[in-house]
Each structure stands twice: as structure tokens, then as C-alpha cells.
Image 1 (cartoon, helix red, strand yellow):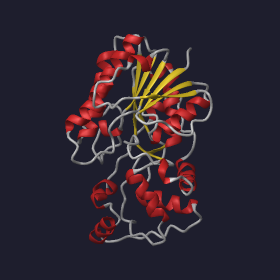
Image 2: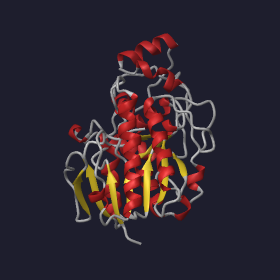
Image 3: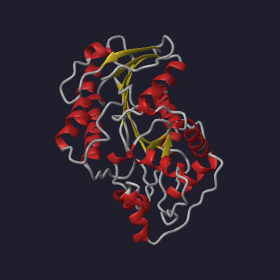
Image 4: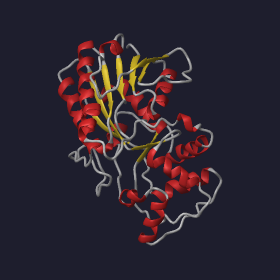
Length: 326
């Protein structure tokens, strides 16, 4: 089997970790992104420019001599005013064009990195499995679901195999958005009145997601499947913060506040709009992917500790503001 993989969105939070892991796994990596990637180690990674996906991209030169594709590039962390059309163009239509080009090029397998938001809103009253009907609630989730459907339409009768991965919220060194705000909370010197946030949330470490992608690239049982990706343990926000503080050798110092006071506190911390999400459950069952032979390489507790330790030395310049998120 040839092991030449194109990774789109290679300069993002997930992409930079993935290309390094794939290179260590004896893949020849073509790393495609809008901006050059600094500090590429080793001879197995070659950077190539990827055009702005809001406009049509000529995928043919990127797919030359490529056997596999991991499609990470997309619009995730955008301004709330971003319209549905931008999400459709970048996340859905660009994926359709890539799938068509991969079919024409005879690519062996294409992995599309979707999101749990293609299946659900910010909370769910049931533990989600792939059998649950998709019901996205925002433009991002709808565009990811449409991209999945384009992939199936183009490649189901093709020689090019395809896999859809729907990761839970990803955390690790360099993450932005709400997960980065959590590590800021953990680093703060103050007691935190977040003990009343009881919603259990599935998460996936960067290391676990990278290993899941590597697994899906070669595992025959993954062909034509859609798989949720999450670490085994679902955690509450207080449990995440307590684990991060423990990794830094600190006591949790977490207590409960009345909802009105909690809402005011979260507003001061820039998390006011996240109260509903953090109070509700969003637990996914990744058993279907585990049944194909994948296992998370680290526990959630160990991954959170590693994140805390590495974030202390991670230069802020490495946090890509357009990094892929879920």
C-alpha cells in the first residue's frame, strides 16, 4: 500500500499535530494550507499552498501521486454574523469538489473530519450514537452534514473509499475557543463558583483524535462508515477544571453558586453565552469506532495533565486563529 497522504488545513490546531504524527508513522505527507507551516521537522513532510476554499480550488495538482487524503480544512471558529452561504461554500461545496477530484485521480481513501455538531445541537438529552438521526442546529453543523452527504453521493459507487469522523470537542496544546477559556479558568488564582455546572460533556484529546485519523486511513472496517470520536470518559466542567488544577499541583477550590450569580460570573469571564451549553449534557458513544480496533492512546486525565503542562510553555503565536474546531 502506498502511504502518500494529503492533509488539508495542515497549519491548524489539529493539522499540525496530525502531520507530525503521520510522518512518524512512515507516511509521506503533503501538508496543504493557506499559510506556510513553520518548524516542519524531518523529510517526510512537504508544504504546499491551498487556496481560499470560498472560491473554487484546482485540486488536481494537490492530488498528484497522493494515495490518501485527510480533509481538515474548513470554516469553524467564525464570527456569529457569518452567513449560511459562507459555511456552505467552504465546508460543503469545497468538500464535494475535493471528493470529485479524488475520484477522478483514483485516490485510495478520503477521510473527512466532520463534527458532532453535524448530528446535534450544543446539548443532548440522550447519549448519541451514529444511529441517531442528524439534527444540527446551526449553520456550521448544517454545512458539515451537507459535506458528509456530498461525500457519500460522489464516492459511494467510486473506487475511492471514504470515511467520516465526527469528533467531540477537541482539547490540547494550542486550542482556542471555549476549551482555551477553561484552561485560563484553571490557571486563575481564584476559587471558582462553577460547582453547579452538572452537564456531562464528551471530549477528545488531540492525541486521541490524531490516532483515530491514522487508524481510519488504513483500517478496512472503516470504509464507507461514519464514526463518532470521543475519549471514554465524559466529564463535567468542574471535573475538567479540577483535573487541570491538580496537574499544576493545586487544590480544585471549586464551589457552587446560585444560577444568577453563576451567570454574572461567567459573563465577567466572557462565558456568559455558554451557560446553557455547560449546564446540559452532550455525551457520545464512540463504541462503533472502537469496534473496528481503535482505542484512545491516553486517558482523559493524562491528556488534560499534558495539556496543562505544555500550555504553560506553548507560545501564543502558535495558536492559529483559524484552527479547525468542533
